Image 1 (tube, helix red, strand yellow):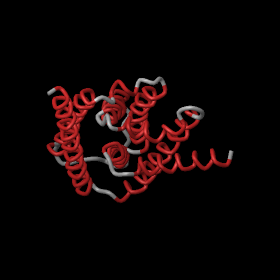
Image 2 (cartoon, helix red, strand yellow):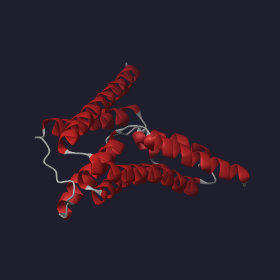
Image 3 (tube, rainbow, N blue to C red):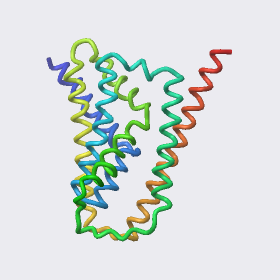
Image 4 (cartoon, helix red, strand yellow):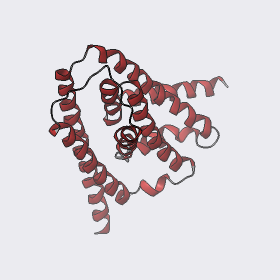
Length: 213
């Protein structure tokens, strides 16, 4: 029992640290929280959570192999790279911000498209995420799969909630000029992650073609 608790605690910590590592998801939630407040942050997190559910469902029902092959990984990485480029250029080309940081958005359509849907697509844009879930969960596959997935999700959630709380706190001290710089930084980071996905896609396609020759 003590061994299980230790393993699950380690799993929680790994999930926490893994989510805390700078990446598109965490930047997306932080940016939206700073810009539009708590509700936007949690809406963005919900979209990302839906992406987590897709990857976890593939693992739980034994379908992870469907996107673990070189060809599916190459195709999905290429699509993900294009989507990250789209998000990046949208941030880099947008006009200067004129945000009233004391107001909150109320339009449900805006929340669904700008936060939930974009968060979902952003999370799915990195098919390598399933490897993160699969590798960590592998030791628990036989006996403790359900509780392990739950603990891992808790670790991920805890990280994002902490980031949302920090975003809500720091938005009090941010003006539009500083937020313009945040947009530019996020755009550049998204481009870098997009390039990494294109490299991964190229390597996957190269592996497929190499094996066929």
